[in-house]
Length: 372
Ligand SMILES: NC(=O)c1ccc[n+]([C@@H]2O[C@H](COP(=O)([O-])OP(=O)(O)OC[C@H]3O[C@@H](n4cnc5c(N)ncnc54)[C@H](O)[C@@H]3O)[C@@H](O)[C@H]2O)c1
Figure 1 (spheres, rainbow, N blue to C red):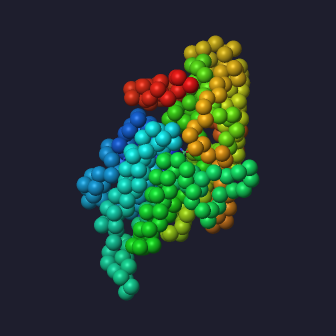
Figure 2: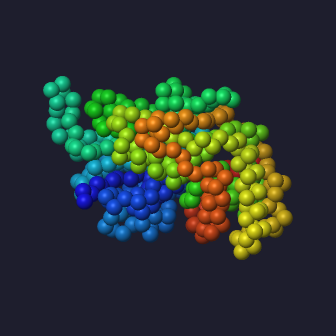
Figure 3: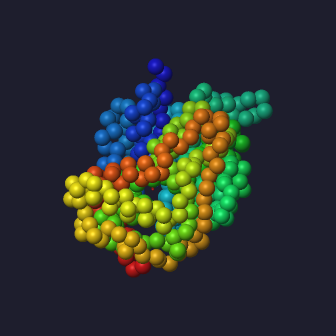
């Protein structure tokens, strides 16, 4: 069997780790090199059981480090780069935009530059580089590059780019650099733009895992503004399947939107999470062991409306028709089933939550949320 070697950056983060597990369990024809800087959002423990030093290797390092990325291309026969590595939290981008520009834009450019050094085989008659057979650069992007929608309509791949936050501006810039390399050098590159993911291993600063954590601790549930902002929720495994479909079958130079057809207001998510935790605790009393508060406190009384995020986009909704028509992908997990799977995972993996929220995160968390 012809094996391909993937460089998966950000593979110790939420989506990257789920993708690593999905690839290793579903495909025999891939070897993986995970490159991750292990920032506050990356956790080696999440993938420790997957790293075997043979099919799957781990390297701690920065995607902006040219010497390091070059050494990986020298050491391993890398055919595919899937770039998940990013600073990914909008709130943090409002506090420290520069880090987002460095990692998300310059890191992307660095990966493509090194790939170019190793993958270009010559020049065609028009002076364009020719590329090693089968190579692919894939950029994991976001629907936030399209800005905000009103009450109706969907983002398609041709919707104008209109980012509003430092995070989404940095992701948009990265997408434009990928497109520039794809046009100028004919780098075989694809981009996926997905909606909000949820599922196991999600760092508890993002809405769903934060709400679960706070409910279990009996702490206030911070909801921005009036809670009416709408996001389109996608189960993380469905996203991983979409990325792999694009890496294997997507056309170089193309963008693909990946969405869950699951539009929900933030406040609906919070209410549903409270109700589901309560129901699970009542049906399966063994789960109550992880509660750090009384079951009677698991109620909407914990909801606390806080000052809205600056420049908070009102609504995102993705039209994933191109993924369905061209690649046969569609979101398989209904939100109602996905949220139960997710909550069960958190109830059964509290040690993971404790591990990732120890240290630096704890201070940050107190600063961001305790005074609201
Ligand atoms: N989570 C979502 O809902 C969502 C939605 C749309 C797009 N995305 C995109 O998907 C990708 C993955 O998102 P996520 O939610 O898994 O993020 P995450 O924050 O959970 O993980 C990011 C990972 O990247 C690593 N990293 C950060 N800076 C790095 C650097 N300079 N060098 C190497 N590694 C570095 C971190 O250690 C972490 O493991 C990101 O590019 C994000 O923009 C996420």
